[in-house]
Amino acid sequence: MTDEPGAPSVRCTRVLIAEDQAMVRGALATLLGLETDITVVGQVEDGPGAVSAARRLRPDLCLLDIEMPGGSGLDAAVALHAELPETKILIFTVFDRPGHLQRALAAGASGFIGKNRPVDELAVAIRQVMSGETVMDPALAAAALRAGPNPLTRREQEVLATAIDGASIPAIAAQVHLSEKTVRNYLSSAIQKTDTANRFEAAHTARERGWL
Image (cartoon, rainbow, N blue to C red; front, side, top):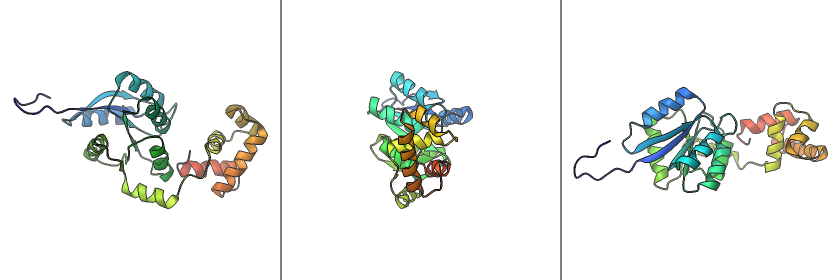
């Protein structure tokens, strides 16, 4: 953009997009690029790529999807918040799970918006986050309040995430570097907290609620 003579210059917010679907990623970059005060400086397809690109590009804001290969947007948010606290984080997702909102805020995100929202609303959310506001979908925020906090500990989440694909106790223990007895104890606790019958139900229930 070229400013009119004598007009104040517009500082563009430099945005990095992390989205695993190439078509969605490209469309977002194109549409956000039409905004006079937003410029897309990078596009990546996964969480680790977002962290690596952010280290190099130093964007003002990272727009992160949640479900991505190789590491979720929530994992990337944790790393980005620790390494680049000056970079704002806005989560956008198709999933409306209250636990995701809670985890996003805990990870240092300044906003959470659904993918079903129009791009102009996304642009507004970016501006709000950059002005210091916290942005969240009202319906999802209300659902998160009704759902209450995530009852699972970090270790219980880790063990359940490993169990979700049907792994055996020995396989889970080997992956999380715990004894089989300790794994059983964590699983038993998680089953009680999710009010389910077994570890497989507990894992899927926790995932549906956004706790994993």
